[in-house]
Every structure is written in structure tokens, then in C-alpha cells.
Image (cartoon, rainbow, N blue to C red; front, side, top):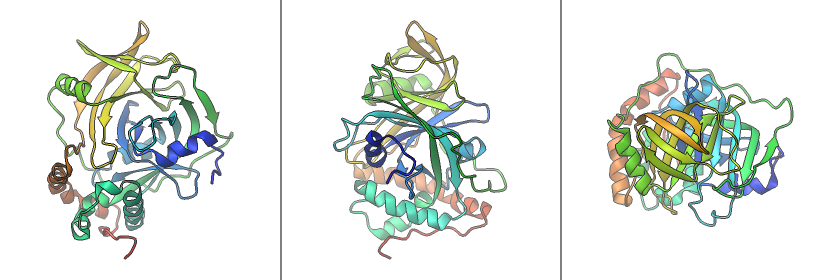
Length: 330
């Protein structure tokens, strides 16, 4: 099923990728990028991601400014190393008017795509994690797609554009009141974060604002720490970058997805002698769950203590009851 006419060679990427970089724009027009799990929409015309109801920031950014981007460039996973690297720019539609339906969908799809993440955990324990399973969905209608054979971007990209006039449905209305603030304190030193990430996390991706005003997320072929940030090497086939606000994400996860590590830096970028000079302003708080299954479980519990307090308030803002975790067999 391919009603939107996406390039046939990219369908496996969209179906099988375990993670994708999802980029949104702040009120000031700066990109913020986080790794998440992608899914092909139910009717095959959108690429969908989700975020927790208790941490709705990226969904709210997408609702305010629907110009978003996705980068499929993570080769970690069974038989994924030969798949191309794909950048999608599109329009976001935020769905949070049916929280129970959203939660049911996430439970169903997540258990199929990432079975190792919850393997062996009793259903009673998973039901108590409703603060995590309660979801907002973001459906992305692709407008522009670029792709390369691999993360090196050593040759010019192939391109696909949606038919003229392609539009996305409107998002559900924004809930009243102020959305919750940050729940993870940012680290005090961006340099410490960068040094650790460069030493341990293999994937490094840069997001800028493209010439068309959409976020543009690209894999970096190399990164070197300098006084005020990082010097990044992009492949010869990468599109030319203009100076402006930027975001850098460094991340990793095991082949059998049981957890993940993410580090995010924000600042500005400028082209410089064949490289991209990324000047760091600060590091953002990260949602990482690293280590063995016991360590990941402990990490979930500690985060749950903070996030479950926000669950009822966010459901109330949307005039809906707190959803329940229901499994497909129930």
C-alpha cells in the first residue's frame, strides 16, 4: 500500500526503522530534534510519531508550527545496515482529542515493533505505566524527500516531491491553559555532555533550518570538539547550509531495543572551510534509559515518580479522563 506514491525503495526504511530523528521548530524558529519511534500511518499516507501526554513539548511545537522533519539514518537493527538514509520534510497534524484511542494504538504498535522493551514484564506492571503509554500522536504528511545510499552522504541526493497542492489535515485544537514546563533539569556543562557523547554514542545528527523554512536534519560523518562547540564534517552530497540556529543530537540504542541514550545540544551553525561549525549555547535535559533491563526498569520508575503527577492535569486540560493501558487481547 503506497497511496501517496512515495519512492518504492524507501518503503522498507519507513516500515522497519526502529528510530527516527524528529525535528520541530520553537517559537523563535530554532530547530529542536529528538529520536523517537516511527510508524507508517494507518492509511499509508503519513509517517507518524508519538510523544507522551505527560511531556507534550514536541507535539505542541508541531501544532504551533506544522513544518517538521524526519531523519531516517539509524542503521542499528536487524538487517538495517543496507537501507538508505532518508530526510523527510512535511506538515504535522497533532492528534490528542481521543487519548484512550491514542493509548490503545501505541500499546498495540509498540508491542509489535519493540517487543524486547517489555518482554517478560507482567501486564499489571505495564498498566501502572500509563504515564508513559498515554500518548499524543503526530501524523506527518511528506512534502519533500531526499535520500542517499548511506550516512556518508558522499554523492548527491535523489529527491521526491509531493504533488502540487498536497496539504495536511488541521491538528486537533490546542488544549486550554499552559502546558507543563520542563521536567528534566538540563546538565550544567554542555562540554561534559559533548565529551561523553563523542566517546560513547556513535550517531551524530545536525538539524538546521532549510532554505524552504522547514527543519533539515542531516547525519554528520565526523565531529571534533573545539573551544566553543563542535566542528562537523558533512558529506559532499549534503545540501549547502546557511548560518543560523541549529541542534545537534548524539544517540545510540542496542540492536534489540531495550533502551536508548540521547544527548541534545542547541546553538547555531555556520559553514566554515568545508565543515559546519556548530557553536553550542547549552545542553538540553535528556530522556535516556541505558544499561541492562534492570537498570532500564529502575530508570523508568524514577521518571514515573515525576511524570505520573502530570498525567491527570494533562488529561483534564483536554477535558478527557485519564486513559487506561489496555492490551489487544483484552
